[in-house]
Image 1: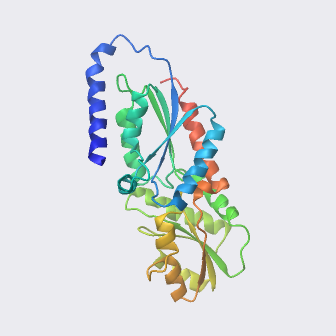
Image 2: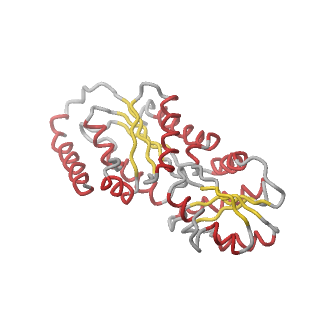
Image 3: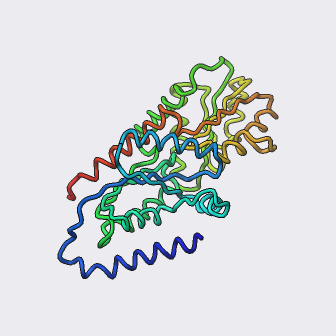
Length: 296
């Protein structure tokens, strides 16, 4: 199925290239705008709930505007397609379909937490589709949750406020995915801003730095007896349920228990946390507004 989807994308691009001479005297199509929301995706109903919540938020903000979705995770797309429970599209296929359906301007909004590998690939996809003959005249790209110093500072405040009051010996650990990409630097930066507000707030990633190994000695030093575990991701999907809250020995919850620290998993994605989701919506507003900007 994935090969077939890639074939249709390539076929569409070829058609655009062949159409270029015929369009040399202009393109008379009327402007037609759409929004494409792009997330890593989730194969779990609990994770998809967060995306549906954000979808509803966007539809309230842009009533009457075409809103579509694409998922960057090929593994999750293939899994759902094989199970015949859904047929999520890749960003490339979604953009190709929008062009085929007559849309000329698209605001693409990332629901990634950081500008890592997945977002970098999305940038490349958007660049390839930008300005193609008979294709999309203009594509703008909204940034992930944390890209600028201001983003990180505001995210730290919103993340802590979303957790409300905690007991004196209770920490909060925000679990990120982590990546070898340079975008991983957003996690230590977030840790810095969290500590400015709360010395018992920590960031630990599954596959990057800081890791839980970095955090455990700090919990001991701070005499922490309990901790909330919060996914630093748009959805509370597989990583949240297994790597964070699972019963396996290497899960965050199990490793904390081994150190005598009780944990309370908060299985709610950031896309369904209003104070945090508002930042993605703000980035989307900028992307939509940029569709009106004249080229320089």
